[in-house]
Image 1 (cartoon, one colour):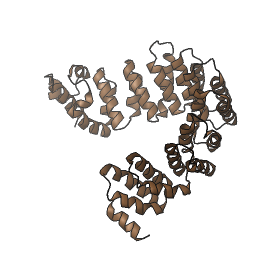
Image 2 (tube, one colour):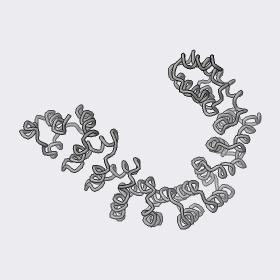
Image 3 (cartoon, rainbow, N blue to C red):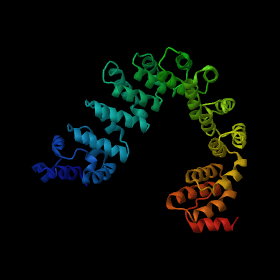
Image 4 (tube, helix red, strand yellow):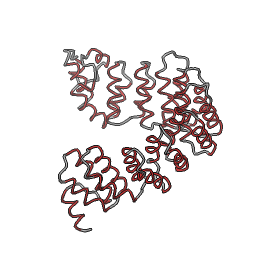
Length: 383
């Protein structure tokens, strides 16, 4: 469908079809403001136009640079569903409407548009003193997502801004970079008890992303001497880090009251022999809470603990649906071929929801692209 056809549909819905459309010329996009459809994606023609825009980028660019607010929204919706055109998106980042600019900046950051990072930095710097913080906050987040090195000085400046929301956003984005000045700022903030806890938490989170020995030492110190809230922040940071050295640090806290569940969950995100052994020891401890022991068993499977296989297979017979699903997931993470037959036995009597999870687990365990009963049976026959 041509651009003119799309606009004709919207204008027809309000009786505003113009002579320009009849001549198949590009209409005045300001007419879109009169359309009664508040959200362009609700327009039946929008999806058809999106297909056309994917083939004809100039159509999308015309929408992005028009004077009609609904045309801008339509351009954003198309790019959010079909894919980004950097030229059209740059025009929307330059848009005077702050809501459109914010949404365009978020889209650029989330889709890795590194070529637009300089433009985002420019508008972020222009927006520093604006009392409405939304555009600046999203620009700071986008610069972190894009890992735009030229923005480091700006982000360091924002990390020292007196506004807590701006500080938090900058602390989080600084985790995408690594140099001595950034590590020192994050470390000092994380340990400063006079700083708001929400800001300290973001600094701790970013330290967890650093492959830096000093950052690790600071996290170890906070884990040892911090209060419960600080310790929770450190555990959360380590959980996201994927750093085995940080993960092993948590083993010493697996039995600490109030932290057991969080530590067990965090350890499950690190595939490591020592961590797997610690989780299995916890899972076998009959003095521990049964639910915690089971969660430790599933976490151990996620880390690759092969001795979690038989206990998890036994859980397939559980009458507790949530427990059974967790066992299926654990077996999928463990990816042992021995589990395929018992999983298939359960699959044959399971409902549709459980069947999807079971098929995923069987694919993981067989390391084959299984997708039907016949394929599973053929695989088992050949074992």
